[in-house]
Length: 136
Image (cartoon, rainbow, N blue to C red; front, side):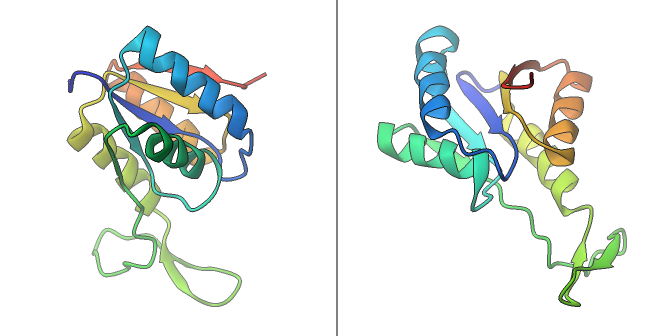
């Protein structure tokens, strides 16, 4: 475990910037968040967490999924609606990498879809603390 490292994840449509800032500000005080790890998505919870990190000067790392790399023999290849090929497993592989390389103390998950559920399941299997935000 990396002291003070936390993964922040959530849906790509999660748009509550004030809520993300409020929760992450509190996480610094209450959880010792000192290094923020996120999945590099250009929208949603990842983007908001990255904006918070930059605004607060907190160190961290982005782990963007490499959806277009279809070269792995283990890739599960599909086509998007524009006919572009992508690796369906890129997101789960990135989630595993964030846990393995990031060695987080915990995961703060804002409401999301399959990718967020995958991250939570991986963290729970690894016995990493998880906190869910706005999961009604």
